Amino acid sequence: MPEVTDTGSEDPTKDPNDPEYGVVLPAGLRLERPASGGVRLELSLSPVSRALAALPRLALVGGLVFTLLEAWRHHVFIFFWFLGLPILSWLRGPARRSLLIGESELVIEGPRAWGRTFALRRSHIEGIEIGRAGLFRLYQRALLVKLSNGGVAPLLVGISALQAEFVHGGLQRWLSGSE
Image (cartoon, rainbow, N blue to C red):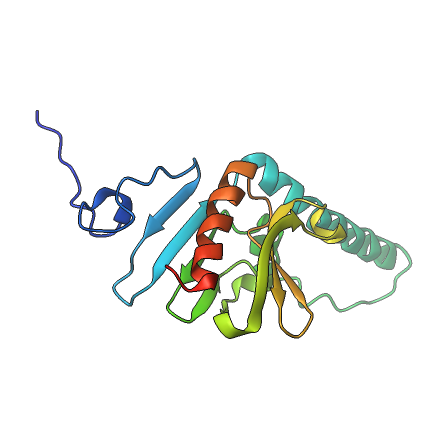
């Protein structure tokens, strides 16, 4: 039976007419060009990284459960109405994180609290480097975006060293304007 090959309409590394043709992506990364424009880079985290990212959440939930049990034991009525089903998805954390690299902005899709998407304009980014996230993210490897207002935004927390080098190189080219 002949093998069916994709023409590469979504994955630019498989389309001979695309400048990204033939680029070997590290394991866990996927590249695509959405119809809306730009390049979407999607990261799939390893189970170990996901487990490490979940530890602070587990500690928080453990503390809340302990507080609830103590309140019940001492007959204190506490409202925990905000701990519905959304906390389960927050506790699990996102399995995939993606960046949409547009002409003038970098859109981070879903890694923030409760799965929100946010965008960073290229003009507000001073630099991007590979570093470590903070204490609440257990100092896992991440891409650190230095903003013009002095802030630092950690992106793709839990990324492997090989993935980080690949993504960092691409973002540096995008930041310098020679895409």
